[in-house]
Image (cartoon, rainbow over all chains, first blue to last red; front, side, top):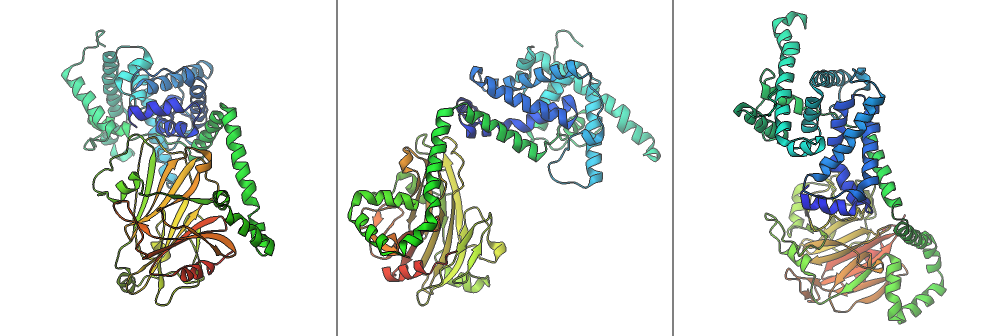
Length: 193
Length: 368
């Protein structure tokens, strides 16, 4: 979606379901993936994604186009605030049972593949959960929300260079932990698999 | 962490790699023990929403948006209701048509030119007579599909274009594919169907069916057309108009084409159907400027447009077609017949066929 198209759809979205549909199709997968990593459970994710879009529509008249990435930043700010409220009410970043986690592939898989994929998601989510809150936020916004560093900086109200530094440190730490916890163990003790 | 958040050369390379991975321009990183491989792994682990949830939420949001403008919604709703009301009386039409009263009524109607347009609108289509084919359609006819179409300003449009090969008879004979049986009713993908006229002029046969965005190869019909779409300007409101073509011809490869347009329930869009350059058919779709101009419009030249009767209902007959330059050609080769039946508009175009033959084909169209 190019910025001019997005700007036009945003102008029409308050009254035109087709324009809204275009925006929805563009942002839904990214928002869903981001919220999934932040909260884990499908039910919570669906509630929060729905609430984000509802709030966005409710407030869209007050949205002010400033640059090509401003809507993405605005939308994810709404989601982030809702997630913060969720955690204030719902305890902490906890591990959910596998059957309550989202699928990684839209197409139908064999049951054992579904379990493997959910385990993969759970492992990575747990790994991200060991990082600092800011690193968690930045990695999930970058990798699953599809936001660029400048947009993330806007969502979090920090400098773009700070975002880049947190992203690098977070990825290095997560990778190191991943090697220690999974890859190295499997390579060292292949019989235990 | 460095408080000043200075980026090292290594950081810059990592950020560059992350960009490449997330943009899908780096698919080399596979090894999980490398940092970049880990990033690629992370980027590929994207949760997917349940399809029904996604659709339900979209529907909820659409309702909210519609409720935000009560006046427009009401007006649109009334318009749809009014149209449905008209169409709901369709079953009565044939009963009325059986009576002499209707014939008398139609006779009176035909005598008053102003009422023709109203009647055409009631039947689900109308005509637009003009000297030249509109520039948009000409651009499509003349377009080399290997390059993008130059848009005319910022106007919104979509053009669906179908082109048939000239030498069809040999193709059909050599292909060994099945061909539509006269009098049959072919079920199309997406719940549509195409009734096949049981009458054909001597030496002619039905050769195949082409459905908009539908592949009929699985039904055994040869792929007889090149289909293409193009568009520009703002996105079009959603529509569900169907357009299908029944292709026929004789050994001399004279073309006989029956176009079926599903016309019911369309709002706010104009569908302008044209036939040009011998084997080229098309549909220009644009937002309606006035509510009364919505629906299917047949673009025809400024020559004669005569009312005839098909199945006791009014139909329209004219000679001519557009050429590739967008000029109306009336060399008397092409005869065209347009009529409505069971909520659909039909356009029959044949080469060197008199009106009587076209009417015979039209009246042999199976009804439900």
